[in-house]
Amino acid sequence: MTKSVIVIDDDEDTVRLFSEFLEEHDINVIGNGFDGVTAVKLFKETKPDVVLIDLNMPNGSGFYAIKKIQAIDPKAKIIAVTADGGYSTEEKLEKLNIPLIQKPFKMDKVISFINN
Image (cartoon, rainbow, N blue to C red):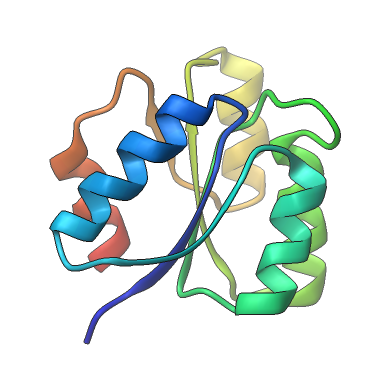
């Protein structure tokens, strides 16, 4: 079954490239956003199988969005995709039970995370 995904990153090129790659691999991108507030809104509207989200964004960080989305659906599948590989970031994500994919990322790893 095809997975549905929303892609959230403040870099428009990253969102576009990510979305194109996922679509090429039969993953249905049902929404794109560029900040945490939009991520929460899109999650409510689309109920995707997976949320791919950057952490460092204006107008609601990825952590803000993750907490709001988990409050809506504690079983939501969220994957953080970020260049911030600091220990405190990894520790926070671990507590939230959110897998981390480091930028620059390998797309085959992203596909594997989505499909499992």
